[in-house]
Length: 219
Image (cartoon, rainbow, N blue to C red; front, side, top):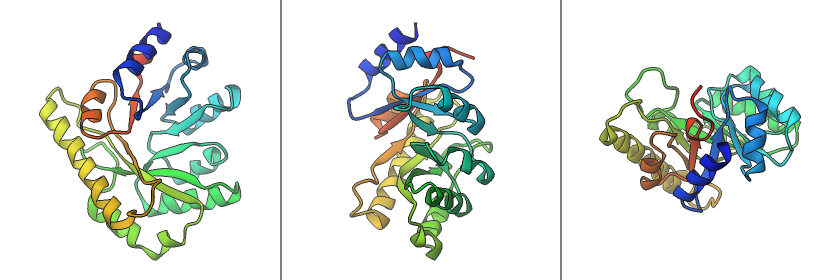
């Protein structure tokens, strides 16, 4: 089943969009099936679960940390994480930089923006992001690379709300690109869209979609 669902989704997204299979709470066997079907990007919410899976699965898998990340957990994923989607503070960025240096790696990250109408979502607003990128501390970091932005839309069946939120994230991306990353080709990712709304997200400019239940089934 996983193989068929993956193939279906791959067919429905453009070649330039990266599909991250969100495998949180799923057993290793499910990830193996997806891997054997050619999937290489996997997304996890929790550091411990991701690390346990990383230890037993093939090393060409590219791991995406998509959940809220506490500073004291960064050290566990610093040796291997491909992309951290959920950077929402200078303090967290500083810790990622510190752990990246320890492992002689430059760690790629996305700045997470708060675009939803719900109070439960983490993220920066535009002013906070602006302040962070203008800070002296940020300019001193050598072991992180900000490669784009991430956001989660409101949990609603109203497509117009979701589309407006995605459009806002695209706008934030464009403003940051022209202000801070004009000559930086690596700043190109917009991570938005999940199982229920990834098509909308792609229409609004998403380059990374995070799809779980449509691949692995519900919890």
